[in-house]
Image (tube, rainbow, N blue to C red; front, side, top):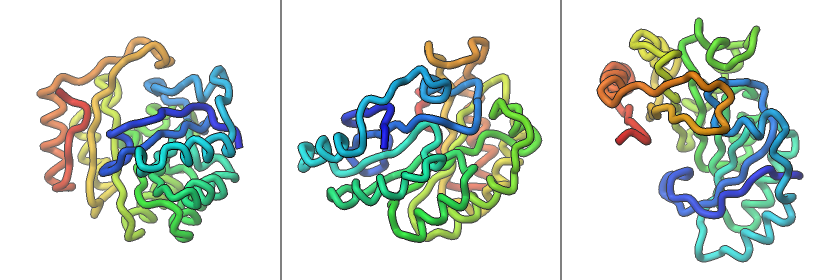
Length: 230
């Protein structure tokens, strides 16, 4: 399996672990605020295959204690379960990032016990989902199914929203919290611009706005926190 990126060490991507982050290419969304758009449009070339990753992991035993898999959208790849099996066979627990659009793959991975932690993006309120994802005709039933899978999974998970001034307002957080009612935890992370973001006219909410969005969300999801907000 071809891998399109590797961050050799991170203290942020896998809660409670010193991990590396593996990036897989391809996604079914075209979010205009995506930080990894080079993985979506094909400009990022593969950097290694799964055998090279396992060799790297073998060499980092005692330094790393987890692997985060992100993208792109990892669940697009039919080879994902086998990749995770190889990583686990090398002695590493796995955290998976997903947009929630492949509930069958998500359920299969969880049912097999392949992941310890899943982070799922909640892009926006349902009526703004297509706008925020940059594609038409999204099947929201898939998003709802993935939410239900995680809430009822028994594993550690989080829902998270990247907050963009042009896309989100207070009422959206009420509606998103209704979507994920019963969730263990919910993180709001403020959009930050960078060269790889495909659309150049997006801005971040202020710190006070982020605090207000979190306060609104806590009325529904008590364990709501801000992430990446100074």
